[in-house]
Amino acid sequence: MNTRRLLAAPLGLAAIGLSACFSTPPRPAAPAATSPVPPLVQPPLQPPNSVPDAIPRIEPRARSGNPPFYAVFGKRYYVLSSSVGYRERGVASWYGPGFHKVRTSTGESYDMYGMTAAHKTLLLPAYVSVTNLQNGRSVVVRVNDRGPFVGNRIIDLSYAAAAKLDMLRNGTAMVEVRTIDPSTPPPVVAAPAEKPPTTPVAVAPGVGAPVALSSAAATTPAAVIPTGSSAAAAGGPLFVQAGAFSDPANAERLAQQLRGGNYGKVFVRDDQIAGRRMYRVRIGPVPDVAGFDRVVAALEHAGIHDAHLALD
Image 1 (cartoon, rainbow, N blue to C red):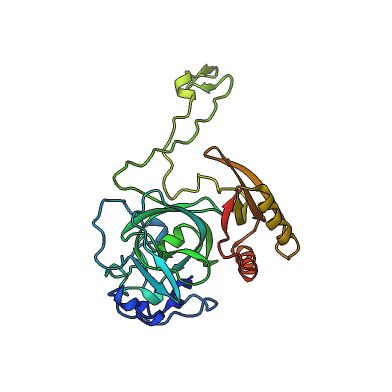
Image 2: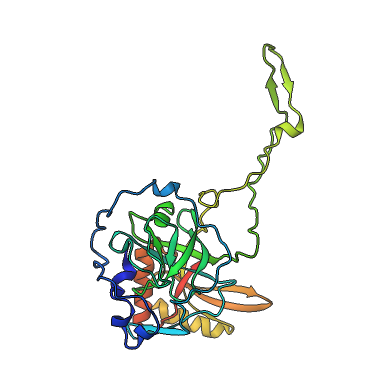
């Protein structure tokens, strides 16, 4: 739901000097994150699930919304010099009726029925794929706004994008965000061919005797998986990563410290990345966004501010 809009009046009212970074006018205050979702301001022109994904294309850098840095609620954010190769996991929220037709950071009008999103640091505009790690659904959106600035949310999706990810009811979802380079053709993802039976047979019309099928007819051809399909399975158990160390003693020290608190199961995962051994302190699995938020809030209270979502 509209968690990022507790920012409310963007940027000039949220932090001193922010109005110099953005040219967008102040926005109306958003309802509290715990408020019910308000009714739609107008009926959608088409069902949200039928809205096509954004089509990545090469665009010039937006004239507004791309300062070197800006501050909101006393926190400074640095806009990335390049969006290529960006990948992040965390919690997504969505915003809708209260901001329909309101000006975005790029100066465009926000369309809650379009496939767009807001992000704190990606260059505007940018194209990203967003995958719901809890159900495997994926969409492609165009990032043209700044936010969310509340809690540990990493991206704010349009109403239509949230609907396609099946996260409207809960208001949030654990997701993976990956940038798409419009200059690079997307890879074709093929579904695995079904293994034909050992002796595939079919009955010829008007003939009672079975007729053997050719191997070509018995083999299911590979098919391209649509972007919005849930054919790509969810990523498996989700965890909170409290820290990563090259020294196993440091990792175990943090794990022992956390095992004394009410965080849940704490363990150290031994990984090898680019020839280097890394020891990652993980908590979980966490069942949902509420569980993730609880653990992250407890870690922040203990002085650990860079915890993030991780897959097994």
